[in-house]
Length: 191
Image (cartoon, rainbow, N blue to C red; front, top):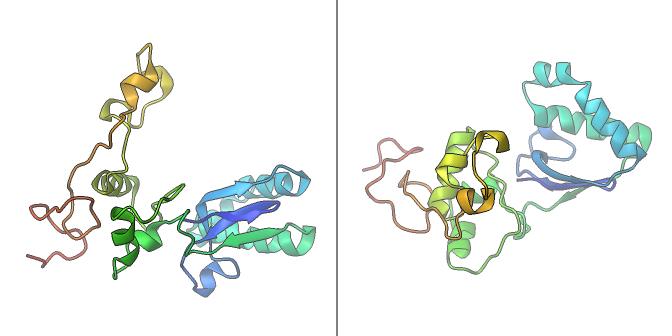
């Protein structure tokens, strides 16, 4: 997850520190933008830079390149929050081999504000991981539906669960309950 503040705007450090994501290592999936002329110009530039996304094969890399450009040329102020902030964890923490962060999370020692499931292959896996974490509250009949597609008089009551909608999917991923009978996703030879 990344939250960066381009103070114009805050982003979070994604955890990826290769030159591809330099100089900010910001995550493009979650960030905060203060409305002003510089950020409006920056966001307009992103919209006009589809070719950069295609050529780099990464919206994240394109965003970071434009952050650097706008910071240098137009004085856009960018702040990248530490990847170690407990309030804004992401895939970096979820997929950590040590499991330290997730153990603290499941023990109730951490209380994130937003958990951005970056470093994850696709939306389907993100949903499964959140379910297994016990952090999914959207009813199945409302997933990937527009408000018009959901025929109800009370969308909150029909779509939102007061209790987490837990289910096991992968035994080798963090889980609020043991998922011993589930298959592995990252370690196919795991028995």
